[in-house]
Image (tube, rainbow, N blue to C red; front, side, top):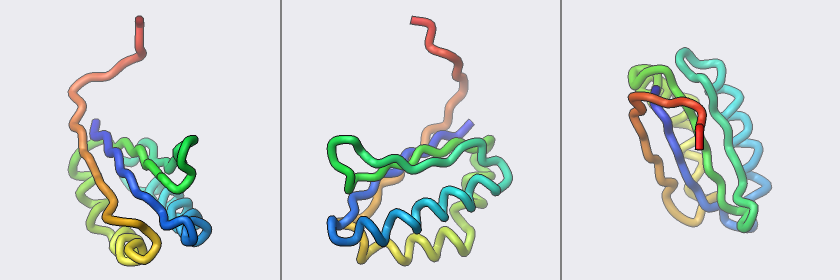
Length: 101
């Protein structure tokens, strides 16, 4: 499994323009091969901070997603909406399971 965590900071005056773009990107990604979950979340302390958490079956699935024209279009639309570059961290998970305390 591949876990992706991305963070982005919206310009306060651009938040309303950013939200529908992120929602559409999440809906689209969930239809892609190997995507098991993909969601954006707003920080409860700073509603202009967004975090996406994605899980993919394999790295090849993520790589295919990263090469889609739709993602390129989204990334091209982001600069005027954000305070800086988004950060993307990829974790390759060898095992996972429920927390048992």
